[in-house]
Each structure stands twice: as structure tokens, then as C-alpha cells.
Length: 169
Image (cartoon, rainbow, N blue to C red; front, top):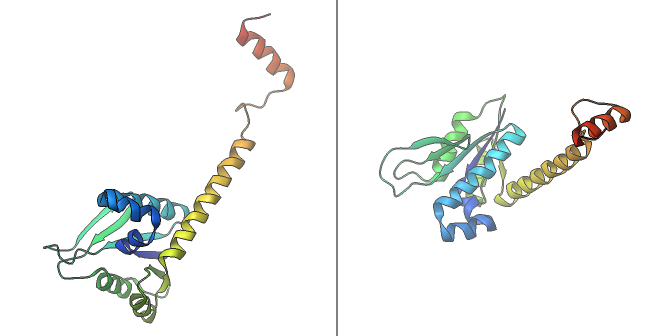
């Protein structure tokens, strides 16, 4: 299984759409990120975990599922990087591959040393764009291939049905 652990605020700060959205409504930027990652997860079948830094927020670590994506808000005085490193150590084994999506160079080096692979914010965004383009292409192909009727009928029968539908003899 492939697991992708994502530094949520790093993506929000790196992707233009989310960057401008956070200026208007930070919560909306987080929700949009979750929507995008939910499609990513559904398309590729990866396990996706998004970590948000709650360093200055009092309390324990908080976990939830949003748009079918696992979301973790770190505990008090724990950075997203520390939480990600802990997750990598916990999840890493010989059968599973772990990717960490962050553009934080120091964090990339640390997780690489733990056996995980890295994706920069830019690489993940390019992957999402390519995925959306493939989905759009598949939809167009399906629209073209889609039969007009669920039951294949010969032309003569279709003409008779059309006359009946219009009420003519």
C-alpha cells in the first residue's frame, strides 16, 4: 500500500489557488485542499493523511476524516514536521511505501533518512493537475462512446418508435 502524508499548511502556502483562498477564508482553503486530496486518494487508491500544525493551540492531538481523507491536527507544542516524522516511523515497513509531500527542505532530508520518499508541493500539484486532465479525457471518451439507447435497436424499429412518440401514424 502507498501512503502519502501531506504537510497541509505547506500545500496551502505553495499552491496559488489555495494561497489566494486563504486570504479570504482560511477554513475554506483547508476544505478545498481536502476536496482535492479526496479526489487524488480516490483516483490512485492511496491512503492520504494530511497533517496541520496546531503548535500554539492548547490540547491533545485531534484526528478526523474529512472528505474521506485522514486529517491530523498536532498536539500542543508539536510541529507538523515532528508529527510527520513520528507517523513515518510508525507506518514504515517492508510492504508499504510512504511518501511525504512538503517543500520544507530540512523536513525532506529528515524523512528521506527515515526511509520515506518525498514529493514537493509543486510535484504533488502537477500530479493532481495531470489526474484531473486524465479524468476529463475519460469523461469525453465516455460521452462519445455512450449509446443513445440502453437497448440496441435497428434503425427500422427506432423509426417506428419515434413515430409513436410523436403521435403520428
